[in-house]
Length: 205
Image (cartoon, rainbow, N blue to C red; front, side):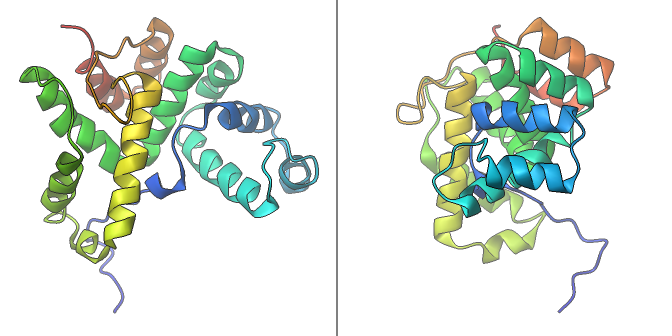
């Protein structure tokens, strides 16, 4: 049955992988160079710039990263490509958020609430509860397999660990996000206010 175009759906790529910072720097370089399809294919498949064992993996990963980065203006690509590891990681996180409203809402509700209530750590069940809650907005979530939901949760927690919001994906111990001034400036300059508010709420109190 075709979906009514007016109904709301989460378009998420969390299954596609976590922040992939090293690979994201390479994709950002290609985007900055404005490569055409042939040069893109040559870089990803022929030269194997992402250094993946299988061409299919390289192609899928490059595409996933590109779709994230294309949600952000070009100055973000520049910072991602040239910045230090912490800065590049935060920009890659912004790209993942720009592509995943589901992750933004998880941060705005569950994670922000955990900081307010001074919880020590996040629990895996909180992801499941969050998805159950969001299924009221997008009933399609009810059709997602248990393994897909679990994988998305694992990727979400891995991203939080990579950006430093939790100590590790295993302990899930919360720590405030030290958002870099360069990222704040970029988000303000390009009017990405929801992302800025979302990330600022997770900083030191």
